[in-house]
Image 1 (cartoon, rainbow, N blue to C red):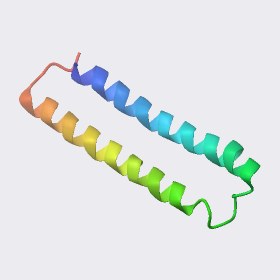
Image 2 (cartoon, one colour):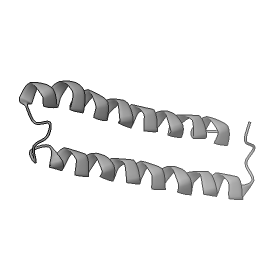
Image 3 (cartoon, helix red, strand yellow):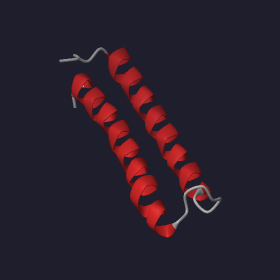
Image 4 (cartoon, helix red, strand yellow):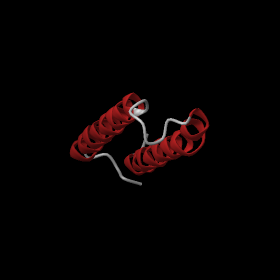
Length: 73
């Protein structure tokens, strides 16, 4: 995969993670009455874990692609 396309997929992944969080917080947790309680803390810890892993994966992959000299476009 070209570097530019990987970058687009990587950024799109952040939007997917954010959309999933907003869906869970706005719909699922509202129906379960978990907003404002400690019951949803496990979800947010796990979600932030995924965000950090996605960030580290993307940064290291982009660094390797750019360092190896592959074309960006």
